Structures are given as structure tokens and as C-alpha cells.
Length: 165
Image 1 (cartoon, rainbow, N blue to C red):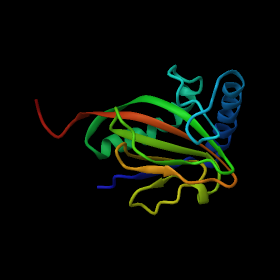
Image 2 (cartoon, one colour; image 1 turned 60 degrees about the vertical axis):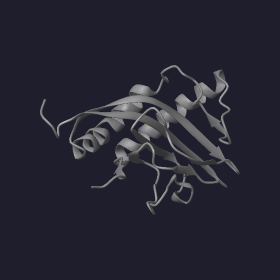
Image 3 (cartoon, rainbow, N blue to C red; image 1 turned 135 degrees about the vertical axis):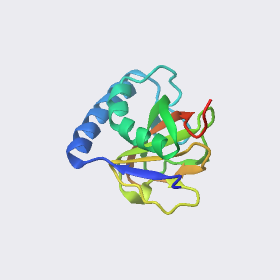
């Protein structure tokens, strides 16, 4: 079984998604405090559902449903999402995600040189990739010397079909 799965967005879908996401981010950065950890900007600490939720869910839903099916689960529920933007020197050290069993990252902008690193994996994530993995898998955003934008997502797999009740 594959624990880490990569789902590339088709270019005709990726570029409009990227532009819309950047517009949402700019609006949020103008109106809210977006400081968090060693990221340049992030809306992680904002607890309200972000204005870009529906846009992101539209693109990740097929990937999450495929992942759930591969684990013999009936579905997946998105719990939270946030953007993270990194400029020269910014990073986010090794960490895991709690209060969920599934995580994902969408690389919106940046080269694979700055892609999220997943412990024990040599997967190089490129702009337009949706990568889904167990939430307790340590991962990090390495130091960026250019510019990178990604979206983090926490979700919950549910409804195992492996047993009858």
C-alpha cells in the first residue's frame, strides 16, 4: 500500500487555480495579521473557514476520495486548511499534524528545490501537485532562497469498509 500519493493538477486547471489562490491570499494579507512561525505569511492561526475553502476543496476532493478508497474507507472530511508563503530564508521545521489522520499539501508556486520534504521519501513535489499522506508523517518546509506558496490541509478518513456491523 502506498502511504504517500501524488496527484498532479492538469495545467489547464492549475493556472486558473493558482491565480485565484494568489488573489485570495493578497486580500487576506491586506486585512489580517498573517505572521506565523518562520513562514513569511500564513493564515494558519485564523480559525474561521478561509474564503478560498470551496476553491481548494473542488480541486482536492477527487484526490482525497481516491486516497480514501485505497484505504477501504467510505469518505474523507476536510477539517482545516491554510496557506503558507515563504520568501528568502523562511522555512518550517519538521512537524506532524494532530487532531486528524490525513494531511495534504498543494504546491501553488515554487520549484521542486523548495518542495515540502516528507520523512523517508525522496518525492519531489512540483507546482500543481496535491500530495496526500498520513498526518503523523513528519514533514517540513525547507529554507527557501526564492519564493514558494503552498496550502496545507488537515482531513479525516472515515467509514472503514473492512468489517461488517
